[in-house]
Length: 199
Length: 199
Picture 1 (spheres, rainbow over the protein chains, first blue to last red):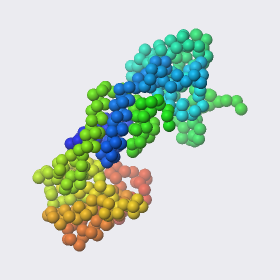
Picture 2: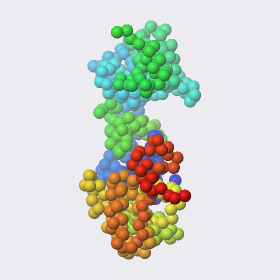
Picture 3: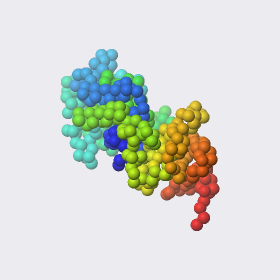
Picture 4: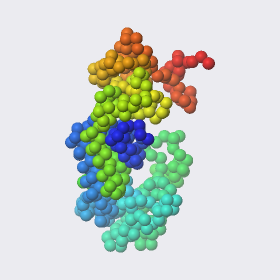
């Protein structure tokens, strides 16, 4: 499409090629950006360039960070014997937001998906097993998503770890807090039933 | 929030300050951006900087463009006696997408909104009146949004233009094509009824 002209059009095209940004949102964003002052725009483009050039995987947990070791892995106040396994850095961020988890993480950078041709060797699974061999780990909490891929990955990891004798757990599935039963899908309802806790 | 580390965090903060991008989408975007190759990222940041520095208002219709006169105003094949008045360049783009409008535009760069303290002098209204005086205009089609602000602006403009004898029209409001009546709000339904056309 070429509904805007010249440089404006190029910006809209660039923005709309980003994930989750449609043509209309790209138009809105472009309109916003060209109205900001130069420093604001420079601050954004610098942040993009800077992150692109400097962000890499933590050498221990494989989350995205700009130092050799991420702040969580470097934090001696945290419990380094408990590893929560997540699919990506956003999931780590979601648990960090709770402020209640004091262990460390392992970021798989993906999930096993036979449909998408992503196998166990395409995610940071070998690296997890190496950590379990090297470090003194008491529990691995699998917090992959509650999707088909997440469940497949969780199952695969638990089978891999169980023989080592290290405790493996999976975060609970069920009705979200504040969730109205009538709006919840059947699979979740069944999961909530299966996972019921005696009071 | 500081759920990501260092430069990644800065990028997420920058992105989430953009309109319509929440903290989660910003995380997803940042994750995507740092995985792209350098050229891809440079192409995006260049487009932003370039548009910010070069995009300005067309000297005739006030749409966003990077030349003194936008391609539509410069196009002699278009009907320069019909002006469609829109609130912003995105609305112009929406009508251009239909490919059926052959007139020119006038972009108000806003709408009258007493609630937000935006008066007639804050939008490109004086500039529209000047065009009507200078150019040979046969019809002004008011295509501001169907919101309170858009309707207020349409009414204001029509009152301003009517004494000049130039034909003023307003695009129709009604049930969107393919719209299911039960999902349409009452005001739209009443508008559709009022605007009914004899068959």
